[in-house]
Length: 264
Length: 156
Image (cartoon, rainbow over all chains, first blue to last red):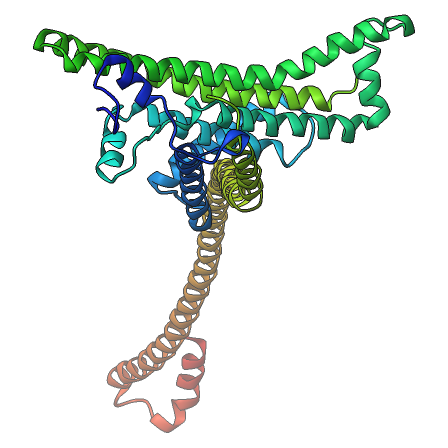
């Protein structure tokens, strides 16, 4: 599945699959495919849940409503177990993260060549369909969470409280302020970075393995048969990974925000 | 995989989605869930109350049945008593009636006897006079001796 001008080599194939469709130069490059799929899936999620929410009956719910309510209740109970304050933002935030990340991860389940082939037939040279394998996507979500962490830290504890938290811990002595500040800043910065990189790493690796398995189909029939088995196995295993990663992203967000709300 | 403007676009999208979810998705779903939870809780409470009500009603019914039985027994007893009373009264009445009838009978019999006695006396007197007449036909003047005969009649 080589793009225009690329030779059909394993390297070229992998390279092609890992290249975003982009416009712009330098920093002002936009990954059209990542944005398209992530926003599309986000809109799909919001539209689906919104339409169910509008039609929601308090009587006997339909199957779709049951499904949606199951997810909502699952997220709600997870949030309630972890986050003990009262904040109307946390639960919807967690729901958005969980479902959206799951849906973006789920694009990984689509066989790796389907959408890029279609795109190529339509004249689009590159198409990377799993938004969470784009570091920009995972980082932007982590950044959003990071902004919320700082916002709520300052809102709950005040600027002085937040500064005190950064400088007077873990060693409560004025002489230790630089050390404390260094430690606490690293702790703070590590939160969004770990969030973003964990999701990105897992999904990127998963996608890469799918691509490597897909490479086997180009070889002889024995390797192709093996490839089918491997793909199926990896797919089943990956179902767990994508769900788990969505859940971890959500839970860590809730935990970080819960920590932001706690006054030491 | 270099960091670029996609980051900004996605951040905006993320914040918008979270805002939308918070405003338009979460509340109706949560309301529906909570409303249903409340209804189920109410339903369960109602069921509990109904069971309690049923128990109460059964206890009440048993009580009333017992009361009814007691009342019935009382009524039967009273009826029995009344029956005995009526029978006694009737007996007493019948006794007095009988006594009255008997007394009346005796009186009638007495009157009849007196009448018959009178008749007989009269007939005996007539017979006696007739006999005496027959015996004394020729010698005795009826007119001269009628006072003696009358005296005899009175003595009878």
